[in-house]
Length: 296
Image (cartoon, rainbow, N blue to C red; front, top):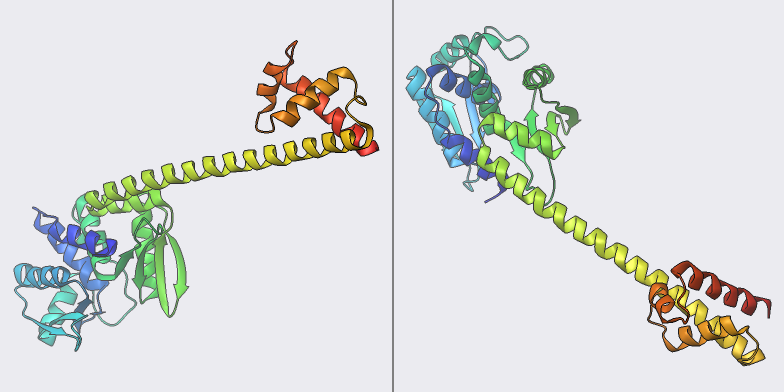
């Protein structure tokens, strides 16, 4: 099951005690459904539970008959109001008349929870969310520009900050930031999905941190190997061209130590010196050896 289907199944199971919230939920499903006008009201979905909820709310709240049709391959389910007169009745009951520009009618919301139920209904009709393991993206796909603007205003009133884009003939209201998506899920009533997303994000953050640490350690090892290789080459060059007596005694002792211990760090070499040196002291002497080799 996709994460989007999981979220919708959770929203379908949300129970609303107040009739006003149930009506707001149905309103969100209707206005963002396949059709919503005085002549036709229908919803198309891939989720059987969403279709069942829509049909039950039509019957429970308005005693409206409906028809259910499945696509030839059974992928899509369309629930339609059977009679045109019932469609007109439903359209008018939500405060809409005529064929003007479709916008959200805020008079349908009697309490704060109504707005949350409405947003959940909108998501059930036209929303999708990516699997958090792959990407952070939640969107509402809206056919009408003014309706999408109306939805953005409503969401912004809930102190969220959605973004807008136009894609393939549809208006897209969306979130890309994980925190905003979590807040949206919580407001709609999908708290289980929100916590799952937070857990996935924590795992991803730890994984990314481990990868960054590993990459950093690899880079440090690579730098150390390259540095040691340059030091060994310089020592070889001096010994081959001038012999081991060419370097001053303090440099020759360190050259011997480095040549015999190519895997040791500067700090470890410093501890082997007698008398002991600081790490920077060892580094300075090795640089002098490299400079002497370069001059030969």
